[in-house]
Length: 128
Image (spheres, rainbow, N blue to C red):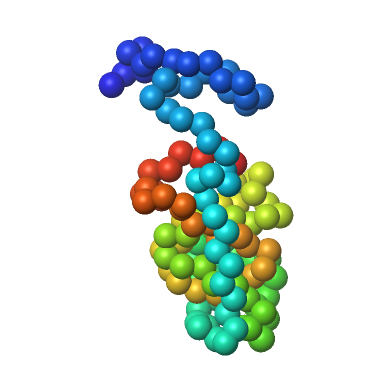
């Protein structure tokens, strides 16, 4: 389907004025819920990191420098599961978000978001 054949509808958003008519716009909280699972007692020692370049990766595979060093007390971490949308609440505007292919523990600065409906996370269109 080429772009010219789309029918469009008007939306009242600051960042976009029209969208294809078959799209729907919903508030983020209606699409995703926050996973509230702590790593206490220890579920995993696989520490995950989120980078704009690599997405979600095990900390040991993170390229470059920057970010905080892992804490030795893993009970202070939260859990991210495979398929969660991981968002860095301090860097989300710069594109610090990615779908996790891993289950692991994450810093409390990350928010693991879970789809509320039986949709495919890899096909969700999301403007953060």
